[in-house]
Length: 167
Image (tube, rainbow, N blue to C red; front, side, top):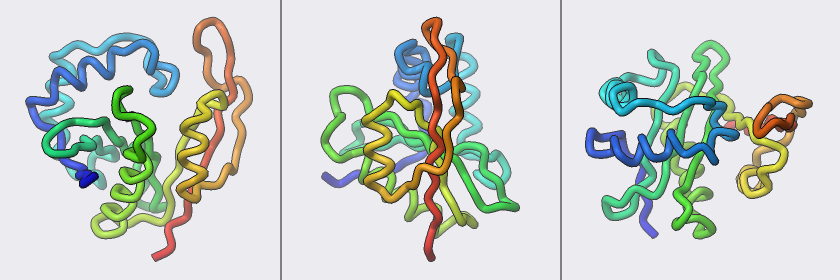
């Protein structure tokens, strides 16, 4: 499958709205309230800003102009050359290697265009699919945050995974 990472477009508003307001995903995104279309429209309009300046970047994972998911870079730290990475593959496209390939593509992008030394991911300890994905892509578990996430009246641990980029 020929995957591409592309910038957000105004036409992506509905899929961004649907994803951001999917309460089942809030445990992974630290959301606790819905977003309005107006707010998300502004987010898309500002998504062209450089990651160094804006400290974040969301790209659409696509195949033949079909959106399959999103990959997010967040909390970019220019001085320490690190950035957080998060990924969501839409349910009907999961278990096809798309997330794995997307992590490869984002790493290639960062190496070419952004001063980077390391990537990290914060993963809920009960998200076995994400743990497996990041471990497969050579991320190492370097930390455990006890009772870090409160969701559905329960506390859950969060794991910190890290990958040092070898150039």
